[in-house]
Image (cartoon, rainbow, N blue to C red; front, side, top):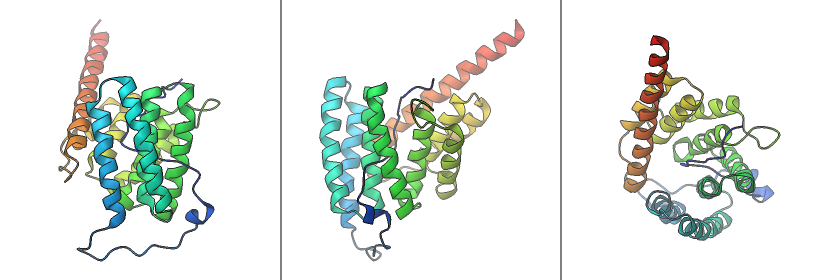
Length: 236
């Protein structure tokens, strides 16, 4: 059975109002004008990175992520026609599930999935295709039927769509590489993980980038170890 271990990056689902799913395109700020919705999301991103990568104690991490979930839900509720808050609420919910793990985490990932699907309908390209990245990572990390909705085929479809939108991004390359690693496709995994490691820095996301690069390095180390075991087995 697949592990219920959500890395994050990224992910989302909550019962959004029905009108949000059928919302008309929202007028975006003109070039050079600050986007108030993105300004509301920025502190969510910063606090998420701090919790995920700098808070070691499990109870402290859970307390902090629960508080952040409440803040994210408020941003989502205040901007029902925008996809970005839904994506970030999903990422935070998925991170919570990754801390808790096990069956008790399933309601969080189910909610995250719903949010991401709604965000994808509103705008699949927003935040460099993060809805696809996050959905893909959920599909391969959540257990499959009859426990959960995990599905490797859907995972790969979403992760490939994310890469079409953002081919050089750190997150889509990392999650596709991690998916391939878990699927035993080591050489392919190494290609995408190496690409993720070379991704350009994201302004304002320094802590998140540093934490993600540590995860990439750990995955590359695992690939080398698996390859060494395989080579040793062939020699014996």
